[in-house]
Length: 333
Image: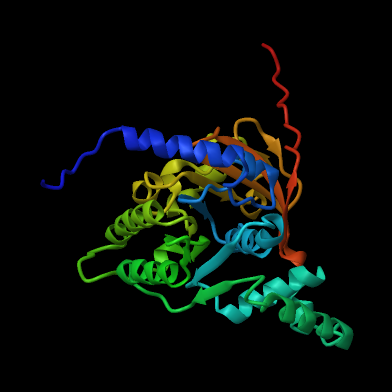
């Protein structure tokens, strides 16, 4: 009998019912993030076998967001067996860990690095960092691995496949894969392969690779992306304009990643562009640390606009209520 490209819908029903039953019993849960607003945009977090894309201008805290999701993930998802594989193409591991130390102590990055001659890291705080590092390198409690060297999409796919197969377990004679968070910082820093004539070609191949991998393995992908230069146009940074918003078409690679993603978040920091009244609603922006997250795609939820505050000195992001709206005074003729 020849292998057919199609199959009966019966298998889909069986798999769906099995998944629903396991979730109902608590045997399968999503990967929760530190923020209820984000979890609500997903399925009480990021489902395994999903792709989340986070796009934003430089300085909007994309890497900070990703780091916090990973750093706090083990405690928030206590009880789940989880591994993390990070592709850190933009930042060396050392810098990433210094940022983590900053968050652990709730002290500025510069203080951790003794940048101020009059406010150097104390011996006591240095010892606290040692204790934090000792705790975090417990590979049984915090299994995090890092790939620093930029690679092609083909090599990326090979590395992820090898990683998942390496840590698979044999349970009752059946191969079981470990739930794994795979992060990419940033998508446009992949090297172009021999058959790729442009970054766009590379991003399309990346989207296809991510979809293929998430179908095969219980992976929650978190991919960071830059925005196109169109967002820098002066008219998009005028107060109270729709152009203030991060749009679907702003994500670098656009359709290449968007169509493959389950959740797409566009992050903006209005004060960096001196926007005081954000978007048509004219949200009042009176704080440089206010972040606006545009949930551009939520495959199993609702799109929305939510507000956060970046505590850069502590290397963390917290939720905040929507700010007030500025109402123009319109004189009647």
